[in-house]
Image 1: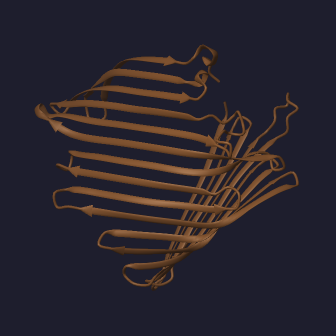
Image 2: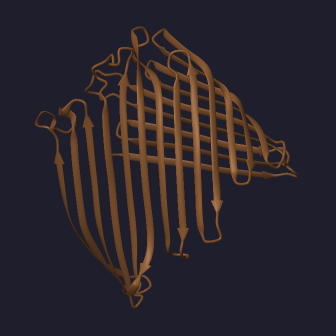
Image 3: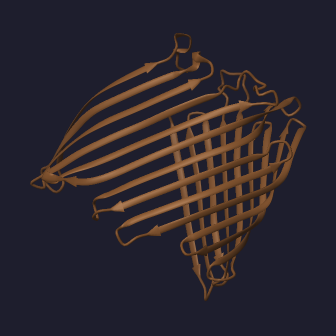
Length: 365
């Protein structure tokens, strides 16, 4: 296997009287067998005055998969590009207005999708509450071998967030946002709720808890540009994350990580059934648990153990696609620092994995 990577990184900063100009350019090229990848990124910004500033960013990613000399297939090209431009003006210490423009281009061989967003933004801050609102227009242009389909409509985004810092080392953050795109044939509506709590007991001991919920409803095309149907997708996602690091008696450090996530997808049409048999309602739950315990002796000997547990449950309307997986692992390691430059480590672990799927689909791709 042959893999070559050449990164080029340039950072430029110019400081003038009241103007600060910063630019960052990155060029990457890599090759692995017959796959060639080019990545280019540019970020720059200018603070024109204490109240006025602008930022510009660009990303271009290209990939070429060359055909084998023993194959009759053609070379395969894929390109993705993104351009963002924003302008902000500070009216008062609490109120800021701005304008934005964004364009994304995705192409795969003869297929190309161009998505453009432009509009105005406002941001208002008072007593720890931040209110952000954006209103604009969105265009999506799809092209394939002479065929073309275009959708356009109004965009609106509202975001409200509040951060609270208490003297008792308790920090909290709550946010709510709603995004809507009133495209002619494929409108989108999405709502996000996030809650974060953090408590510091000491510089090393802390507890963090976060919760996020996402609900969305969107319509999308199914089929090619000339022969298509419109389906509706409803999505619900919930995520819980718990992090803890604390020192218990006997100078033992205990770290606890727990993640839970659930996803649900439903597909509907005007007749309350999806047009295509390839669209299936599905629901999934996953959880990950990690417990680490470690202790240091005489500043040279370190002893640690861990326990991992993960579980995944996927439920489809078609029982033949259902999957269940459980995995558990127990392990530990011993480390001895023999000198400033030399150390000796010994690690061991044992794990068990169980996987269930109906016999008809019990195969891996």
